[in-house]
Amino acid sequence: MNKTICLLPGDGIGPEILAQGAAVLAATARKFGHAFDSEEALIGGAAVDATGSPLPEATVEACRKADAVYLAAVGGPKWDSMPPEKRPEKGLLGIRKALGLFANLRPALLLPELAGACLLRPDVAARGLDLIVVRELTGDVYFGEPRGVELRDGRRTGFNTMIYDEEEIRRIARVAFETARQRRRKVCSVEKSNVLETSRLWKEVVLETHKDYADVELSHMYVDNAAMQLVRDPSQFDVILTGNIFGDILSDEASVITGSLGMLPSASLGAPGPGLFEPAHGSAPDIAGQDKANPLATILSGAMLLRLGLHLPAEADCIENAVRRTLRDGYRTGDIMEPGKTLVGCEEMGRKVIERL
Image (cartoon, rainbow, N blue to C red; front, side, top):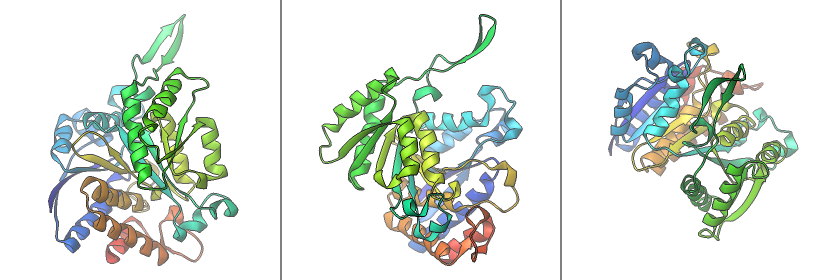
């Protein structure tokens, strides 16, 4: 198989972790006899510095021509004072929109090898944690109009618009139900329908869509309760279906209780065309350039790229198994370090995974 992957290193630790992810993909391609060509493009703060835009048109075109997009991280305090349209995060939101990526799949799995790093009480962790958050990605308050900051009665007033139409809700609900069919056939739809009109429509459309998926169990939960239940008993969840802002918060919570954001991958999918695969964490500028970053979330995002983006499940399994063997052999980066384990840096962790492919 010959495929092209667009690499978006971005900012902070992005170049370091993506270098390891790309190296693991290249080694996997050699093992299975594939040819993966890569093209690197600018996004985020690095793109602002080089071109003045967080998402240059050349990057959009490179992504559209690729078979998959592999992104690391964007943002950092260097660009915090930039006007809103120049902030690095606009590049991330923009590429999702440009590629029509309306569904973000973020799994949270407590690996037995990292049970000691789990932030849950041992009795709660013993019940297990294996869920996936299916988050709508191109609507809600992040994209709704009108938005802005203006003077009202002499006071600066900021405003955003939470908005969804029924088709946006229906298509992400279908993704959640289809995902559940590949897992334990349970979907929990999370919203705030006791307060928000948007959520009331959300619940109505999810219920309508569920009629086509009678083999999947559907439940509903308010977002505040869902945040509590994720800590109290995450084992009750299989697939969590939710909107953009609620999903942003809940997926970070779900991932960090497993031990570290540095372990969790994600995939953004949608219209026909390339998907985007990235770690769940941010750019961690405080450790950038120090070889301290955990590349495993990026490497596991590469496995999702193979499975969901290029339809190569055996190759994806190979990477995931190599990561687990590396952890089983006791290698840890600082964020998941435990007594009695071997501390390694970002580059060394990547090499250890490649050795175990």
